[in-house]
Image (cartoon, rainbow, N blue to C red):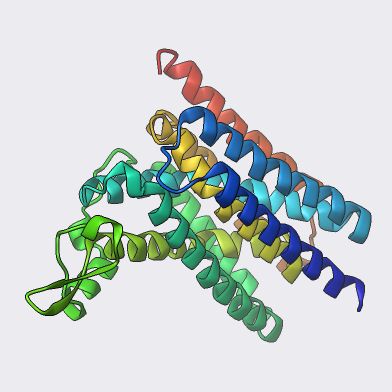
Length: 306
């Protein structure tokens, strides 16, 4: 077994044990998730991600480790935008709070599977067509500039969501939550509940966000292991982060501008590589920390009561 295979094996074992611990000890069925419990779960997933950072440093050296933590921090900060949309979805479909944990778990596990597929295809394409990195860079610069100047307080109309329209067209839906079930029988006909719809929308929403975030990770590294692990750790931490931040996520008013600056930087970094100019990975880490940290601090300064 070569070092890369060993790293994948250890990552898989850690992930399985973490999920068992999180679901078995910290997320008992039917128990409400308090702010305190959500805080401990968030700390648990962040500490686990940092522990893997230390393992990568020992196993593969500082370069891979710094690439990993840079990608993880960027994905983690982008998760806050995910959470805002998740809150809208739960509110729109009137999901009972007692089902939040289970729905988030299934939706996020589906998102992890979809991301793995997305990353695998992306890595294969980049290895075959290196010029795609420059296209990704241009897209990120455009996305970042658009995000920076866009109005983030506009309401999202889920009735216009393409995934929701698809489900309404091809699946017999009911407004009932089915007491937490995905399907129920009504008048002898199998119907898909609002819980089923919410799970699908959570997974597809994450993939939509991944269209921006994963190309940005390619701007930091093309190491498949680093891309997989940073994404999976960030996404699995979404569930506890949701419960921790759902009452405060809209208080980070200037976070989108911070994320936008990161996307522009990563996109520009990818583009200048056409001229054989390569920035050290430490620069990417510094820019991500400064932009995201400054945006959150500025949000707190401008809105001290919040």
